[in-house]
Length: 263
Image 1 (tube, helix red, strand yellow):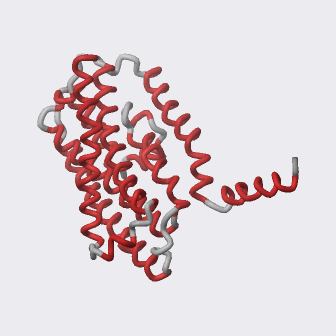
Image 2: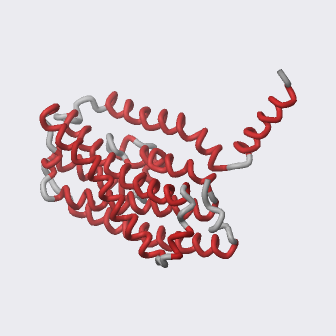
């Protein structure tokens, strides 16, 4: 064994990790988010063990809604990453394609990917658990619409980061949804969060979407204000995300890094 060679290889990977903020964040966020999320869930059920009359139904419905959000966001990221991995991103502009055309095509394809995974899950919940997400009624469409817009928004933001910072930002693509999960109040009401976290949560559409889903399932009451607030926040964030994507693209083009994007 040659200690010098092993030390050299160790240094290579050590510097790759320590000189890249996205890689450091990737190492930190998994245990931190898991502990935080399940800590809040445990606290909620310990304090409010009788909150849900139909705990399985409410939790599974929220899980399906969250999975749709996750698949939409990751689906957009995967489609964009596939263009980067295959070094095909620059070839798109030879067609030529506009940025708006690329974004719209990825948005539509991400929806199809999400639905392919979602429909079987919805069909399984009824025979296996006697639960139907259709219990949310006609408002289910508005909830899905909000989740879809927010998922696409996150996908565009991550793609903008990939254009701006390169492949090292790839880890963020997998961590974004988990970073937001504790603030989304997916399985518990917002009151469980510390006050400072509540302030952050209220700036996200997620808290209004999942609060309203539980409100419909538990109280059989619809608060349209929550739904419209989520939609308004989504539109604000979507405009910001698209603007950042255009900005990142222009920066990458000016610096010449657009050509070198890839594995």
